[in-house]
Length: 114
Length: 112
Image (tube, rainbow over all chains, first blue to last red):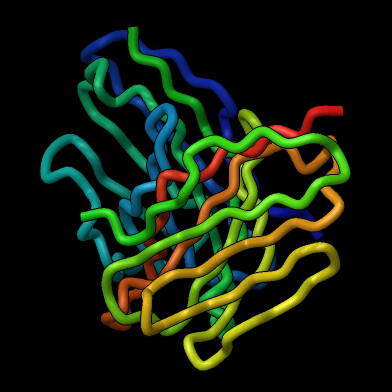
């Protein structure tokens, strides 16, 4: 049973470009969460999604950031017109519908904005 | 605002010694969890303790929870070099949301 899969592991973008981060949850998990981690800091919640629904986006910046979890395929975190301050590690986690307390994390995508 | 805050920020001990890390939080919680993160990797869930529990064990890990002081501790006994990692406590936000609120972590180094 594969764990939470994130790709790419490393992503380099120039300022103004778009970044697309993908996350495939563990099999049987219908809840996906995105977190951002700045260097030497803990993870900060961004968004919580179920299939085709955004449940909680209270941690998402108001502009340039969006997330989706379509009926088919991985969850996507999209950052438009990236700036240097977007450089961070972005982690995806998933949980099954019956045990939402424990979240299983992917290895993360490290975004570097030049 | 930050919910969980770990103490100390960094800890360096000799292999075989015990390591204790502390976490404080601000709001009422339903549960508290500890995660480990190896350098450049994702987080691995270690243990969950519910608000009505005071102590929990898992192998060489011992977690305590004091809801009156809004604090928790993680004890790793007989440390090994492989325990070198950052350790984070995470709580729910106390308002029923599913998001986890993380502290800034303790960087643990085990010296051989």
